Length: 121
Image (tube, rainbow, N blue to C red; front, side, top):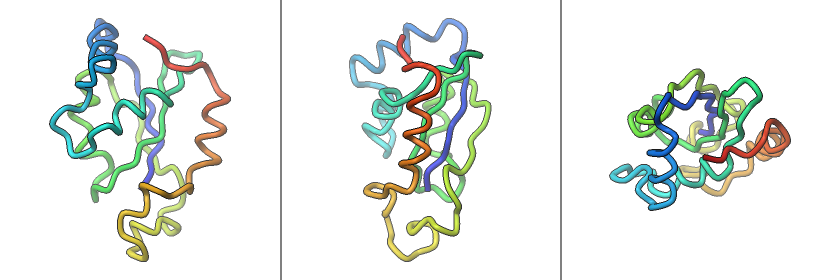
């Protein structure tokens, strides 16, 4: 499943997050691997200071694996489905692991890329 994550960078965490991104340690130890860095490369900073990105997660509970890694740097404001659950081929069982190659949230990601500005630290 894909989720639209909305978060706020925790005060004093920008330099630690920047270091974790640049040295490749963001998400170290997580099964999600390089997904964290990819998420930050695509993340958008909104005018009100919120950061948004689309996250791929195979957990039955949304971002249960990723949450502790993100919460080191962010206060998670909202995690919502990026598209209809009924159309998720991984979630409905028609194609296990489909999210890795799926373009179901392409329109959302394209719209997101046009909002705010690229999240840079």
